[in-house]
Length: 57
Image (cartoon, rainbow, N blue to C red; front, top):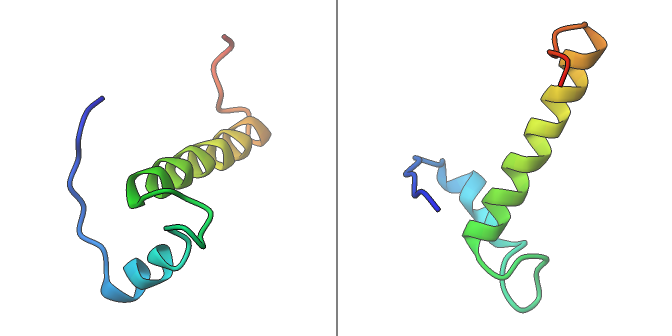
């Protein structure tokens, strides 16, 4: 698995952290970011499909 580095505003990071940990939905920040990226890619695919921009698989 590759690693990346991103800069995140403190306000956004605080919001992310509220969903991480024993009381949160995610075990750690990495899991939360991976889930967010997957969701965003799904949304972008749906938008592309509606506009006829997806290639046939």
